[in-house]
Length: 209
Image (cartoon, rainbow, N blue to C red; front, side):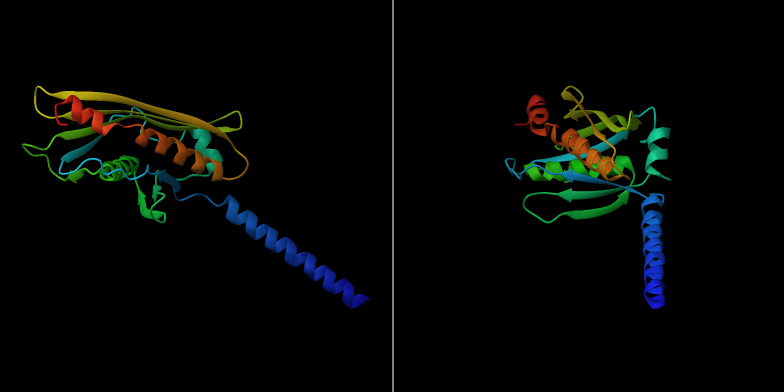
């Protein structure tokens, strides 16, 4: 009987230690947040056309998370992990990077999905696509994560030919535990914002059909 009590006691102690270890992992501060970009179906409707992509950070608030959101997420620094997801290929991680780099990488992949070639440098016959970041903000309000993205996309063919497009996406998710819902929300809003960009329309409006 005494032996059985000792076994039960030791089992309880091990269970408590295991629970505390899980709690420690869940409460550990985040070193990065994941953003999963869900790419649209590959169209490849464009062939033989190149663009130069430029990303300009015009945000008034450079920090993505508000103080309340940062506290709830236990998030220490502005680092994000970008993952690409599509129906054609397995999910691929591009590593951690800052927000302007996240936008650049996602827009490059979107353009390539359409069939465009993205050049590193502008040229005489290569129009410049400029993404001007206005707002990238995450907050925590009334037990919900909220996210908002606002940017302008412009195509410049030459001094006299240009076209602009404003893009805005936002959403919210109730927090249950940790940052799972936050990362899901970031992926949804970011994917929506990038996929709303109509590069082909901008090309047509500057006379490059």
